[in-house]
Length: 100
Image (cartoon, helix red, strand yellow):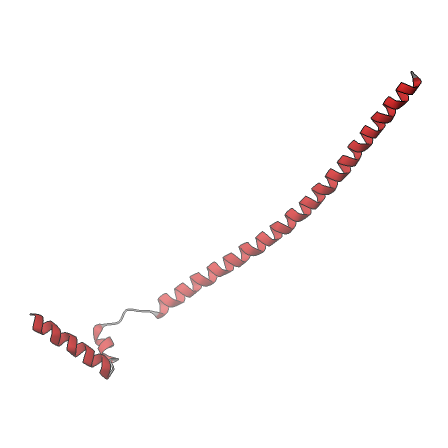
């Protein structure tokens, strides 16, 4: 009877030891996972900042473009005509008159 009891105790002891080992291993894995998670969150924060900066730059560029590009009159465009533009425009006007 004593032998059976000692075998049983030995099995229980081994079983409890494996549970303790499993807990320690799981705690270590959880610790590693938390570390990996914090690294990923840091990378995500960095990417988020980069995206926000690009969006700000894009909005600023759009405002500058809108400030620089303004509509001009037809007379203003004609004032900057080159001789080549003038020839093309005159040919187009001549073509329009023939159609009428």
